[in-house]
Image (tube, rainbow, N blue to C red; front, top):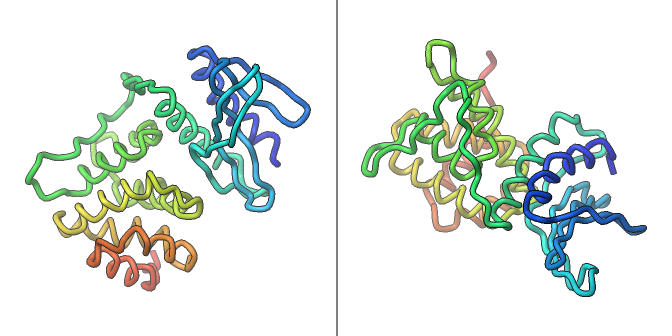
Length: 245
């Protein structure tokens, strides 16, 4: 396990857990957080090269029962540490949901988070970003980096550099809860959105996450069974080579 990556994740989630009455417990076979009723830990599966955020009950001040996964992310031993930020943010978001804590509003963001759009409107790339940020609120802090000084949203770069890699990681982990929400949202936009929004869904998000990844495609197919148009677009986009700049 990459100790630096592990410590960075713990440093991110510890304040939230401590604010809810959890304290760190160190034992020979690993560390965890406990509030006397539940236990939370971050573990690493060497075989699958995956970080797991897990929780279980507590009995006689000891973790009791099976550890249940709240979230999981692939992270190779030689992966760059910058990738840990996404894992730590996702784990923090998963903990907020587990603990019933509503995320605080980010008041100092340089750019306002885009609206999800009005009911009945054809989604454009900006409302698509709003919907993506609803499913993945941990990326709200990244959004303003893709808005120019003149207020132009560089949506292709945002979906290519932020959304697509995260979708790929969710598919690798087969994160059922988030993938069900994600593909339902992508299907709505693909079927009802503008030409630009449809292109972003297929040629940027899905192509970026699925191109050259047959295992991911197999997983994605399970979540697109009820969305035949999106499924067809995904298979086509994954086969098309990106144009050279």
